[in-house]
Length: 308
Image (cartoon, rainbow, N blue to C red; front, side, top):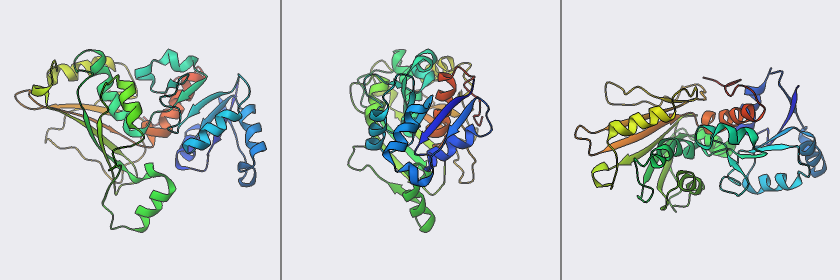
């Protein structure tokens, strides 16, 4: 039976890429509003309540407003904003970490942040397994393509070709930090250093580990083996092959991909390690994750429509 999907915020980058992944699929029918009706509260309320699934691609306050408009128990929601990522009653939409069954049964799913996806994919399984402590002050360095910043940032980078790197969140209050801490079970918020580079899409997230100084930390080989076992069989989260030349590239010309690759690099003496995740900020970091969650909630193969 065809299910109706309403993307609230369909004109944004994330909404457009979700619609692309759903195009031509008989399992879903997209409900749309024209430009005039998109800004009409009554029309939006009707669309939100008539849909089987609602995907919110909105700023946080607008996402909360849309959820408040839903007054029936049947409509199920996937929120791509930050608004509900640590909110009670919401399932975190990272099925490989939160559990496929939890996502499948959920009425309300919060889609993870792009940077958070990389950090949580690397750290959460290792803390759960006791191979890394929950009370260590972790740091996280990351770079992303500019498409993750929405239309305004896309225009800024494409109009000013002299921008090569943009560091931000220098006030140490990035909106992804609460979910990074909560979903990894950390007692100390990680020190997060994000930046945007002159590439349209793509992302690298790194967690450096001074293993010799971390009480109870496992060896690089043990960390790598644990991640490989945790994600064994996943078609979306995969272990990457270590580059033979000791370098990794993020190309500005790369196309969309809904996988995430994980790497563990260790020093020769095992005293240090670098946990690295490489993903598409618009794929597993946003739209691809939304479609994966939608598939699971609808009882369909999780990879349907994904770019793998």
